Image (cartoon, rainbow, N blue to C red):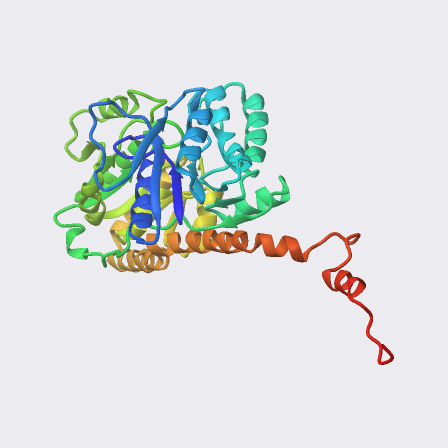
Length: 416
C-alpha cells in the first residue's frame, strides 16, 4: 500500500509536527508500506531526517497549498492520502487556513482514498482565549470548513464527544473515534527513585500564551512553595507562534528565583529525562482544543496529572482511564492545594503513576497505527471488488444474464 501523509514534520516546529513524526515512523516500520511525507517547507539550510521520504510541497500561510499538494498526489499516485490536521495547520490567517482545509475534499475528488485525523473541532475552541475578535465570522467559517473536511472518505477524531458532534450536528458519515495514543512503542515502568530526589519537580509543558497560560500557575507556586520547601517548578516549552515574548514576560515576573526553571524548547531526545524525573504534571489551561498530547506524554512516563477542570479533559480521562486530579479552573489556591496534597502523599503518587502507565500500555503508537491501517486495508479490498459488485448490482430494467441466455437458447423438446 502506498501512503502519502500530509502533516507538519520535523525539523519544522509547526503544530502536530511531533505527532506527524511518530505516525510516519510507525508506518515506515511496516515493510509492506511505501510512505511519502508531504510536509511544510523549512529553511533551505536545514537538514532533513535521513530515514524518511519527505517532499516539502506546502508552505504555512500560503494561498497556493491546495494545488501544490494536489500536484504532489497526482505525481506519486498513492492508494491513501492521510491528513494530520488542526484548523490552523495551513495558516494563521483565515484565507490560507480555509483554502488548505479544502484540500482533503479536493483530493477525494481526484479518486484517491482520503482520510483526515482531526485533532480538534472549531465548535469546542474558546476563541476569546485565542485572541480572535470577529468570532461570529470565525464560527461560520469553521462550520463550513468542518463540512469540507467531512467530504473526505473518512475522518478520525480523538474524543468520543467530537464524533457525536460531527454525526449529530453535521450529519457526518464514516466518522471514527481513535485514541491519541502515546508516542512510544514500549513505555518504561516509572523509576520512582528519580522523583523527589532531592526535590519534587512540578512540571508544566507546552506552547504557551493562548489557552495554555502560566499566570495562575505562578500564583499557585507562591502558595505551595511557601509550604513545601523541597519543590521546584519546571516550565518546559516555548512561546506559541501567535504570542511571541510571552514566556519571557512570565520569567521576568519570577526574577532570578532558583526554584523556578524555564527549559525553553525541549528536543525529542530530552523528553524522557524531563518527564521521568517529574513528580507531577500540571496542565494550567483556560480551555481545551482537543485531546491533550502533553497528558499522553505524562502517561507514557507514568507521571500523575493535575489539570484544570475542563469538560474535554474529563471526557479524555474517563474514556482512556487516565489518573487526573482536577482543580477548579481559574482558582490558583485550589491548584496549590491539589499540589500540596499530592506531594505529601507518596502512596497517591504511586497509585496515579501506575494507573497512567497501564493506560499507556493500552494505547501505544503501534496499536493506534494498526487500527488506521486495518481501516485502510478494508477500503483497498472493497475497491478491488468494485467491478464485481457493480456487475452484480445491475439496474432493475436490465434483464439478468440467465434470462438473456434462456431467451437466446433453442427450446428443446422430446419431439424434436
